[in-house]
Amino acid sequence: MRTVLALVLVATSSLAQTPEDEALQRLLADEFDSMMRAWPRWASERGDRRFDDQLEDASAKARLDRLEHSRLRRKSLAAIDTSKLSERNRANYALFDYELASRLRNAKFHSEQMPISQQNGPQIGLPQMASQLSITTPEQFANYVARLEAVPTLIDQFIANMRAGLAAGRVPPRLTVAPTAAQARQHATKVQIADPSLHAMYPPFKKEQIGTPIDKRARAAITSGIIPAFARLADFLEKEYIPKCRETIGAADGIDGLAYYESRLRHHTTLPLTADEIHATGEREVRRIRAEMETLIRKHDLPHKDDFAAFVNFLRTDPRFYFTDKRDLLAGYRDICKRIDANMPALFGRLPRLPYGVREMPGFMAASAPTAYYYSGSLKNGIPGYFVANTFRLDQRPKYEMVSLTLHEAVPGHHHQNALVEEIEGQPEWRQTLGYTAFGEGWALYAERLGTEMKDVYRTPYDHFGRLSYEMWRAMRLVVDTGIHAKGWTRKQAVDFMLANSALTEKNVNSEVDRYIAWPGQATAYKIGELWIRRLRSKAESELGTRFDLRSFHDTVLAEGAIPLPVLEERINAWIASCK
Image 1 (cartoon, one colour):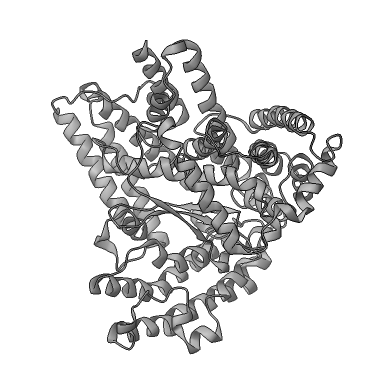
Image 2: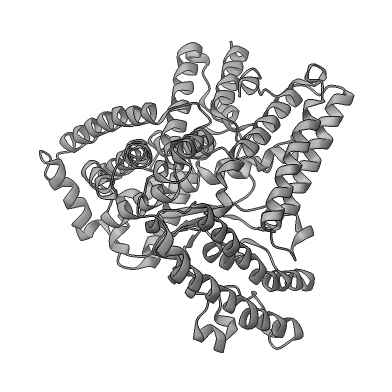
């Protein structure tokens, strides 16, 4: 990381390639190709359709092979004389070394042995394969069916990895895997056996394809392979795995202890912060935001203005704040999207070509899922980005949260940032595979606040309170995540803390706390990243005065794709100097 900190990622003029530049670019190209081969579903979603007929190899041998590949790759990297690299390639070198070192350092925690939770795993990812791809040609249909035929092998590899985890004593909290058996059984029902076209993984065939040899092959793959495989997974989870998972919920209580949690914090925040430091930051932010919430309530003379708990209960229970038809909820999100779109040129000089849409979250995952997801699209594939909204329990999806959520998941949040990555010129494709949680989620949280600088977006005091409630949500994560995983907090303690300090509904809070238990450290990156970006903007505004250009600042933050926060700071410092 110190090497990365020493480099400034600024666009430079084209320079003649040295042999060292060429050697590094060959390494990065080979690494990118290896990643696409190792993760063919990801390759397909990115528009690389060479491996459309394959699924990843999740076996223990494949994992060891990938680790050895990383060791050899780092050895080759060390042989390059960095003093002879161009400025941009010195940055690429440092990031590549950082990624390889992290991969090798964290291998001892065997994440592959705990691959499943209520929100992740084969029971969630595999049934969505077709929705992430453009499948239109005979070759693409044949390749997709070949993938269907490979599903049982992959599921059996997941089961083998979890058995290895049981043998090593490396198991997740029982709470996080309790729903997974039922989730798996949703893909192994008698109705689907009778009619495979009702299965979530059935190909998107046209009418004229029904009854053809490829259709018969797909149906056979589902009835004789996929359905039995999901039934095996459900049986294993229910009878063998879940009963042996641990009752405790904190990462520090697992076999790898506090060291594992600290590695997750550094991975997601890209900063050397301790759990105590993050916890204290969260407590400060909770106090600040709570004061802003109470000021807003009094300023607009809202109901129960002198009783915060009563006001929050009013928001959670008054029917005016909830839709009764999911079509109205989805239409409401689409209306907000178009209002935001009209503001984008005033805040950004570069807008992505890839459009985005709003769609409903699949029912099989909605009950245990958060309020929304963003799914990246691909110009190469002809697939738009999607803001995926959860319509389960409409009485738990308040209208006053919708604006903030749209800004976060669509534009100028995840879709805007991710879609621009595909258009970056002069950058190795490998760089486009990088994803740093603090950068991506920090930007999306910053985008929620950016909505206050837009016209006709936050329309009512309740919308503004919803934004503060969402910011409070991310501040509480710093307290709750570290509380659970490093300070011995109970689940009830975490839930009560979040209900007392925000207008989040009880369903949302319970789902979120379970998510933090299942995904240690990830939730801390949102607020840490947002605070970092806001601090850099304040610094630029202060130092540049009238020369500060907000559009240029935003474009500069996003111009290199996802980068660690310290590298972003170096980049903004260089931009400030260039503006002076």
